Image (cartoon, rainbow, N blue to C red; front, side, top):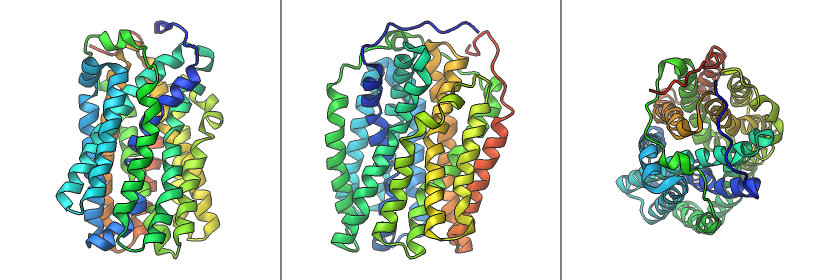
Length: 399
């Protein structure tokens, strides 16, 4: 395959990518995943079933899927940097709505908007981060990992905030948590709005490209299974910890361990992400992710739950990073937004179906443990399947 054109050098590539990582920090780390922290209180206060609680993440995933479908159009309209900024602003607007109403329809719309914004920010940010990273090929995989480790800061921040706000203000204070996370996100977005995020002009101007599913079908199915499997863990594990007797400190510690482990991802997976061998890197990382998700099956002990959080977290964001690495190795730069969007769509379909299915299983069986077993099994299946994805051969598989 023809090596991608090397973009002009950036003066501070690591700093620019860290600023770009604020988009998934807000859109994913806070806008999506912090829902798990307030879910138990929302479910109790608003008298939701597990199916209703799962629906809130399903509608968020529907928004994420819609945002991925619209991402290429957003990038052509606003450019890569514009798509990142507008998507992140939409995610913050969704937090305001979550804090303002307990109405199920309003909250559903807020979660939908959060998904659309997060996807726009993620696809644009990933493509721009890949462009910046490509200017330093010898460090490209490490630089890309900085972007994907970003949501760990959102998870860490919300984990230090939400459980203690709930403990301080008592039952029914979920809406105060949403306001606190809105203020936190408003502060975080400032560098993203002010930084000179120019670059990727060739991608901005590129004609729309069509993604051919067949050459990467195995990989897409594996990524679908990752989307369906991980979301159950991230949605219901705080409820699992609470049901096992864990108070605010235990819930915060568990969530913060997931966030903290994401910070070491660039160093842990640097060599694995450099493997240009089809789906091998994804298989290795997703396999570790499945092991982390399966550990709660064996008990509720604090040590076991802590190891689960660390193992799951260290692999979680690296799975997404391995997908961008796969795109970067197999497609020319002008096609990266389309290819990343296609991967995100597959992932989005999986995480759309995952929460509502797991919620329904929990309601039917009456056990979160059983649902989490299903989650771990889907992650393992995705890892196995990804191993069969071969490296794509030239010419580029875009029509």
